[in-house]
Amino acid sequence: MTTSPAILLIGTLDTKSDEAAFLRDTLAAQGARALLMDVGVLGRGALAPDFANTEVAAAAGLTLQQVIDSGDENTSMQAMARGAALLAAQLQAQRRIDGVLVFGGTMGTDLALDVTQALPLGFPKVLLSTIAHSPLLPPQRIAPDLITVLWAGGLHGLNDLCRSALAQAAGAVVGACRAAVPPRAERPLVGMTSLGSSALGYMKALQPELDRRGYELAVFHTTGMGGRAFEALAEQGRFVAVMDFSLQELMNHIGDSCVSAGPDRLCGAGRAGVPQIVAPGATDMVDYPAWQEAPERFAGRPMHAHNRLIASACIGADLRRQVARAICERLAQARGPTALIVPTHGIEGWDRPGEPLHDPQALAVLVDELRRGAPKETELVMLDAHINDRAFVDAALAVFDRWVEQGRIVRSAPEANAAARRAKGVA
Image (cartoon, rainbow, N blue to C red):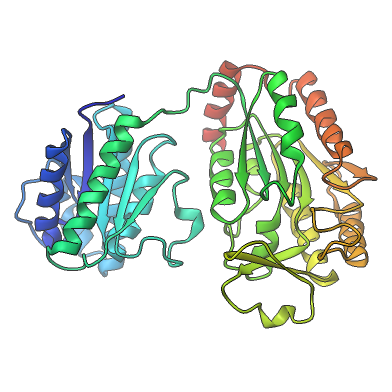
């Protein structure tokens, strides 16, 4: 626990010196110390930074004048983002900072996404943004553990609303630094995807089985950002293996849903060479916000409202054929061991006889496309069961145990850490 944390405070001092001064003083009042990084390019601010904009530009291999002359404010800020990300990562590696707080509008937020992605999981990172929680933020650029605060009334100048948001952001980063428990990696980590526990229930049986084998399980909720975090960590080599059994976000991407994890879903583990056991869980539906009208293209299809936030439309044979092909294409590009388990009796809880999303003809199309299209390097397991049956758990464990015996999946934390370092060089 860090009682007097050093906070890297990043902003554009040419336009937001007053706000930076308020944040610096608020952090100091909470027992923290601010290290101020200036990423503005329009001029010098009213505050003296610890890291001047010239240093940020130099970290990107440029002079500040070259940044200014680069073309426009977009290219200039991208250059500053590269420099700021490199400097922040260096400061973190040197243990000179305990957390980071970035504040800004769209420009500052764009930069902040690069900076926070350059910092490791478990390192406190807070973004105070005028577009926090906005659909403008692409899922693939958001750090898995980023804390965001909406900067209400903060576009220009200090006011009561602005001070309130600034103070909350300062408190968030100080509190995160004092309470932070970075991952200890005492056991090798397995990454798993699922869609809640009512639609997909295999995690309840797999968790104790993996625990008995000496592995820790992290389960990610495939509702957009959960899958994004899973992909980012998989590509970083943080998992010794993945059980990617809920590919519903891939179906959402194909079906143009806003509940997306980005275009590279089911790619991270493969690029890093991480062993992956895959199943087409919940690829029979496309999600949409329950507080909006159902998309017209799914008119007449069965619907299921999970709650007041998210609802799903059961898809037909054409989209199922598309997602099956996308799964096979991604597995063909994997650099590590792959297995595909295809449960032929259903792929989520509402895909059973009598349930609202059961469509046996469309399911048969998915199953047939996966059977015919699975890459020859992929171990294909055609399973005469439903994905929520015990037989699915047993099939997954059979592959996992065999890969452990063959040395494809490491057995200990030191081996896992070495594998993660190798993956960073590969990814």
